[in-house]
Image 1 (cartoon, rainbow, N blue to C red):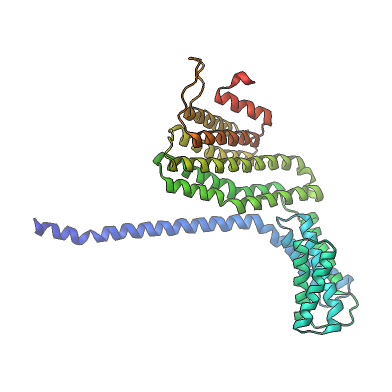
Image 2 (image 1 turned 90 degrees about the vertical axis):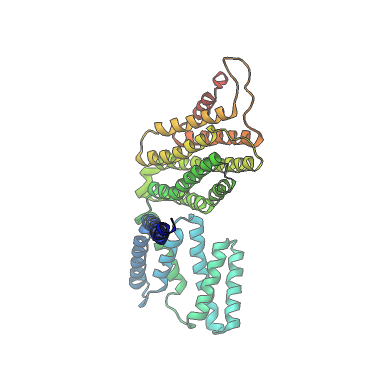
Length: 404
């Protein structure tokens, strides 16, 4: 009946429009929540930097004003703040190079600009000479960059000064030393919290990518599998930041008296984080092999995605138990169950029949099983076990007890 069908057609677009609006609103809300979480994470990670910079600038200004007879202290607090910012997540050697570069650029600029004056060729000459001196001192990239950049500032922004009771490079040296003292001695970072917070953007996205890979394997969706592989590969910058944070934390517990008592605890956290990172490398290799398996039409038994889901869950469980200083029993059970499932996906020796089962996997799948076992071994070490015990537990989960 055409007369009765037309009104329904007229009202169809409204519910559809409301549904699309609801989806759009939900997407915007989710993105907003992610952005807020990201900002909160950055504030927790770098919030101490603001306090360090403020304390360093205050002390550097006071020292330059009271002891160096500098009526307008600028260079000392500026250098102190720059050194504090550079030291965050950086190694001590690189920070010292930055300090030397500032002092060197100021020294060359203050020495030559009163002789040459200000101009384009004078600026070029001063920069060339500052970098040559830095090269002769066998400085690295940070020293060369800072020496040249500081020389440019002196040559272009500062008028030539012929008589200085206290040279500006002395101000810079004082400010840099104050910045180092504040960052390493007075207000040092908390090593464990810094390392664990830097691990968050590595472990969380890594586990999410593995869950996505497991779903893609169940659906044999090559596009989603490739996307999960890209997400694992894109963790490189976060992993680099984590490694720099580990180096910075180790330097703090070695040099900062306030953090000496945390050396043993940081050593445990450092080893755990390093093995978590290694397990992610194995998971990335596994994802690459399984993506190839999908391309080549190889079989993907249902135990495989289940094992990957368990490894991803173990990553998150292990992270929380490390933060809470709890025994990671649940994480170890998840890891070993994942190894068992990978063995079932592969097929293997049967103790009842005495003969081998035919393999259920082809080449890429068999390689992926090895990567799962490697990742499991690293995760067990990250949970606090020694390498030998972790290897023995993996062998038992596979069914190789006779090799112990």
